[in-house]
Length: 297
Image (cartoon, rainbow, N blue to C red; front, side, top):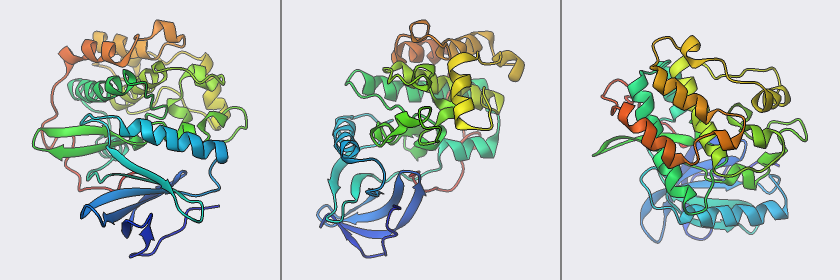
């Protein structure tokens, strides 16, 4: 079953008036909506009943409540969750204006090491905030990072904390289907284990590798083959894939990509602190100059 394509003016949860579609993906549709009580515009994610089961609905609501506890400029603010009378789950969050990191990677290709380190510091700082509160993202990928611009410059903001896992992302290897994001899947998850906060550290390592090399470390024809590679093959040397990358930065990223979680950075903040001396804030128009793009679904 697919998400309904709600018409402009539709009312959701008795307090959200739909203004239009922002984006859509495997987990549903994201709408721009007007909060009737607060008088502000929000992003409203609608998830169809056919995604997951009753247990998934319970996990969805729990993960949404966990995400609502986060208070960090690098984490999207979630402030409401519910189920419509016809069984569609919805999630209300801040409306973010800006392209995704995927959009920026496609537009700019390989980025300078200092800029990549800066983005890594932002992502890891946000994840560190979440991890100490017991919240693991489990689906960190460029499509789930919105690049916003504010008074303090460019800011990478993570969305969809825990939602893909709540709705069944763990089935990637058991059923041979692509429910989640195998390109950023930690080895332990590829082997069917839930893992801990270090799965997010691994995903950040893949992202930083990709931004520097212009390509992800692993490529395969199927999700199952890609998951096998994540579990069993070492990433190609970054200094070979991206000549000119400082050896120290390459070593930090390869540590994040270790197959054994115990060999990785112990947590997001430890990797953030190591990256910080190599980071430089991106200067316009080096990284973010694109027009606002819709929030990823």
